[in-house]
Image (cartoon, rainbow, N blue to C red; front, side, top):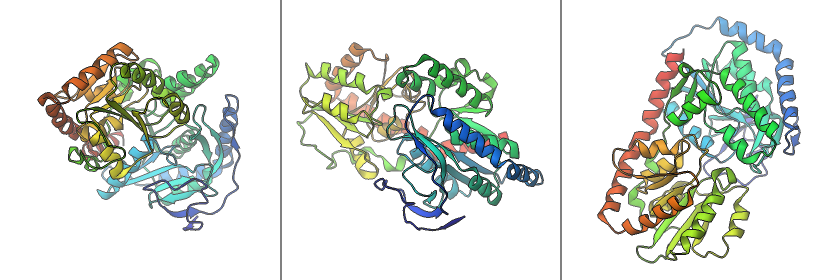
Length: 461
């Protein structure tokens, strides 16, 4: 089914993504259509998804018989993490691409599966552990020019399930590929659960105008998560949303905070030579890292910065990341020479940008956790976050002060706090905060998170 690197990148027409290496590719399969975004067109993906299920039903039933005869050992379990957006650059993909190799390094049987991006001519395997299956059809996501929904071919998934038997599938995103893998898994007899990683209802409210489409998406989310319980939530705020909006019973949710590889970030990287750092001493340096898009509330950050600069010229704001709103943001901020755009960064460059910032700004209300908040704290940089979503939990749970939780879209509150940030910059209070940030970030290590999650998996089985 897979043969060594030919073509070397699976025929991808995109620029190479730093840190990802194709190690093998699938045999060629007919490339399915890639649709333009549209509310009604999403039904085409649903139809193709069910078509894949029907076509492969005989093989699914054969696997069901094979799995029924398997001897199960709770101490030797095999887990599949399935996410549709692994072939993109985003927080979910980056997090899972850290978690799975860490688990494998500890002798755990873990696999990471998803769909290949439409720019590839083949399905591929990256870094010998990320399996991106060939797609049967795909569509650009509404509001996301660089993201897509995809229905993969089911036949190669079934072959992999036969070759590498799984005890549990954790679905990371409620997209067509996850629906398909989840339904096939349940018929086969594999335990299927889900992880609430994306605040889809809020995203839909931000990006979709039609009320009927928002109601339709909410209904789909309820069907998806109610049939893949228990549902893992990264924070208490979203556990409540799962209960109130998605209608999941309290006993079918579990709060398990996430973790990141903290060794990549350090306060000691401060004053390293990064980007444009010809700065006036004690000038406040603010930083944003993440997707440059409307649902991250970047327009609010634009307005906030313009208001802040009316009285504060000796400050700097750097945006790190890419997204469909980036060109508009650059145009809107072209009269502000103290605003910089670093592009998409990773590795040491990103770590240095974090450490050299004085404060981290994150106005988003749609993040279920906030990896970038932990990365900022691990770099010794205090964070300003909103009182909606997951990042507030990270700040509120700190024993010592390492940031501020501010009212969502309250311009005056954010502006006043940024002014106070400038005032404490040269004080012992600020240096103490930097130390507290780094210390608090240690609560979100990969080791702590994966140990807790693995024990939860064993409990489920």
